[in-house]
Image (cartoon, rainbow, N blue to C red; front, side, top):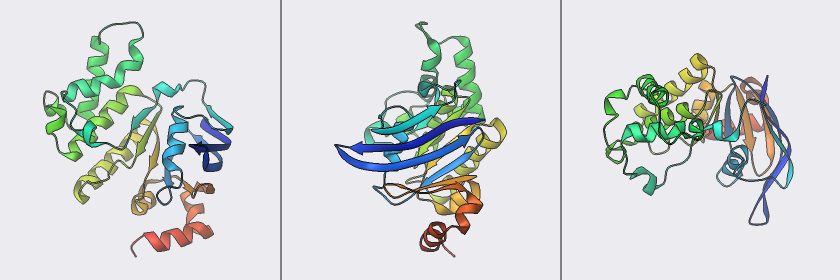
Amino acid sequence: MSLIVCKNVSFAYEGVPAVQGINFDLAEGDYLFIVGENGTGKSTLIKGLLKLKKPYEGEIILAADLKANEIGYLPQQTIVQKDFPATVMEVVLSGCLNQLGYKPFYTKKEKNMAVRNLERLGIKSLKKESYRDLSGGQQQRVLLARALCATQKLIILDEPVAGLDPLVTAELYQLIDQINKELGITIIMVSHDLEAALNYASKILHLRNEQLFFGTLEEYRESQIGKIFLKDHVNA
């Protein structure tokens, strides 16, 4: 079943075309890596998928049971966000906001969900700690738990391992892969990490201000653009 369909989608930034001709069909359970050099439209496309930016051409169609505010999202963190003065539990619970409706307070249901996701990501012992005092890897686990509170369908991650050391990076990738495989949650990840794409992706979308490729990892390995990009960016 299709979860997201893009039909000839194009976006502009300050009146200048940023990324054009996006056409893809993402199914439930897919693990999509969006790759390409800096400034080629990856983050702009993500904003469009989140309905934060409107395309000037084409259409983005979400499945009938998926609303934009029910998509889990891990953005690139700013310095201000890393210094956010809240407890871990408060940050994770904020992922449940879209479920509150007219309720003024979190209920036992939302609190239990937050604790389950903290346990799933191995950080339950940190729930009373200040978010700002955590390491970068711990903060990313907290944000991933928050995203799991927001969705049962789709998580979008924008460079989630940027600035993390190799061991923490490997652990985070393994957690994301488990979420995809064990919970059936579709993953869309913007990344420069081609090694990770080769290990985890089921599909690849390659952008260079336009769509150069969309298809399975196996098809990407055999495509002309895939062979060139992998040769230039993946260690032998």
